[in-house]
Length: 254
Image (tube, rainbow, N blue to C red; front, side):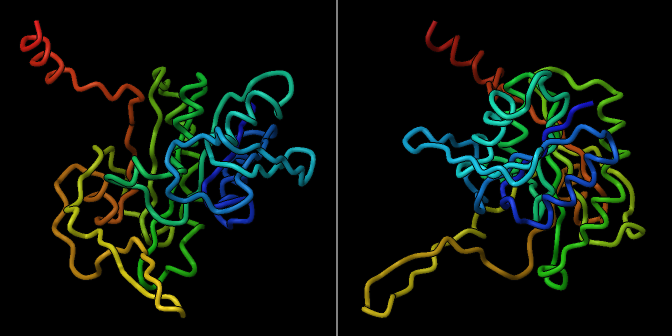
C-alpha cells in the first residue's frame, strides 16, 4: 500500500511526524507532502494567484509553499511517481476537528482533496485541554490510529466519502472506547472579535474564542464523544446537497 501524508500545521509540526509513524505501521511506501508553514483554518482553499514553491527535504518528504489542498494535488499529480497513493492520511492535527471545525480545517481539507481525486482519505486529530495544550497526548493517536485505519479500510470506504477521526485528551489507556458519531454543532456565541491597537494607536483585530463552561453537547455527536473520552469516527460526504429542501424548492420553482 502506498500512503500520502499531509497536514495543515506545517512540515515541522510534531503531529506530522506522528502521522508518518502511523502510516509506517500500515505500509512501507510512505510519502510526505506538507505545507511549508502553518495553514490552520485555510479550509479547502487553492493557491490560484501565487506559484507553488516546492522544497525537497529527502527522497519522500517535501514541503510546499501552499495549502493542504495544494499539497495533496502536488503529491498525487506531480511528486509521487508511478502508481497513485492508495490512501491519504491528513494530520495528526494539534487539536480536535469536530462540529463546525470541519468547514474551517485544513486537516479535513487535505482528506477532502484526496477523496475528490478518488483516493480513500482519513483525517486524524488529537484533542488537547488546558493542561495538555503545550504537549498533547500524541501517543494516544499513535497507539490507536493504525488499527482504526485498518478497520475503516477493510470495511470499504464509499466513493466521495472521507472519514474524520478525533482522539480524546487523555493517555492511550484512558480512552473510553470508540464512538461512531455525527458531526456536532456548537453555540456560535463562542466566537468573537478581539479589538486591539498597535504601538501607533492603529486598530487591528484577532478572531478570538470565549472561555468558560460550554453547553452540554448533543448525544451521539463528535463533541459528546470527545467529551466522554472516546475516539470519534465520523464519515463525511463531499456532496453537500440538502435533498429534502431541494425537493421543496423544486415544488416552489416548478
